[in-house]
Length: 231
Image (cartoon, rainbow, N blue to C red):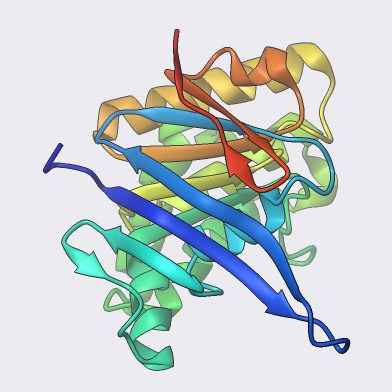
């Protein structure tokens, strides 16, 4: 489909070992994600999930194959252009919330705007408050992370990931530090934001039950991404 926000075709990634052998991590990856779609990638430790995430997040480039963010092929881009595209195109949600301890929820959400065009303090605060309201935390805006529960901290992290209007969210085990009930609530909130904003998301997890909540599921085994399963 031509409207894919993210498209990989026969992408491989291998590394040359000191012995001279090639270590093949990813093998012929095909993946597309479209607006409003959540794609889950399930894989055990050592399956290639981290390498795939690094490629998707433009921290690495394919050894072969093609990767497009929208209409832009990433392989020919300079490091500076990759950094710009990473900052504008992607929002990231991790297992650990990675919030700044001494800053309020509002300040944590507004932090990415320091590196964009919205440098005016009032503009940054207004945008950050809009996102905190979207995740149901406007009443906690002035609380530091130590005063927030794990679920609330992850919702702040979600708001931060959305604050620059990304086209794609990359989520790496986003509920791994949460109990089951809180984790499902946070996931449903994240899915809702993806669909309402008509953006895409790749959710990487080792848990098939979490993956089953997505629109499509892929299994990554020994560097091979199996055919998608429609849910």
